[in-house]
Length: 85
Image 1 (cartoon, rainbow, N blue to C red):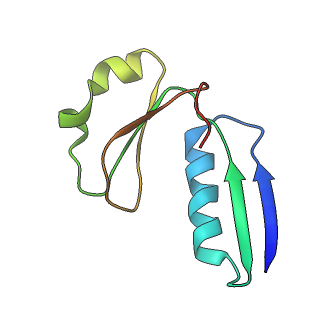
Image 2: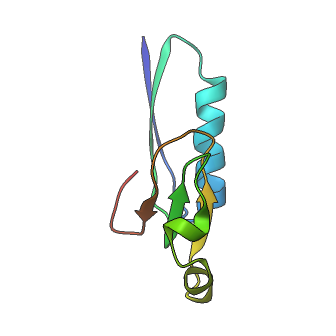
């Protein structure tokens, strides 16, 4: 088993979540990858969630935040530069 550690040096959630999804889809079965990243102010919602029920979308965007939808289920989470994903 091989171990790879990837540390993102940028904070744009569109790119970080795309890289995460790509690593999941393309990862060889004999490799464990630890992908570390942070996002600017971002609300990430699950596949079937209504964004307007989870946060104040207009205020989030007005404040320069991002709204993202992941391809899996789960609840809404908030990311900022204080948490490591």
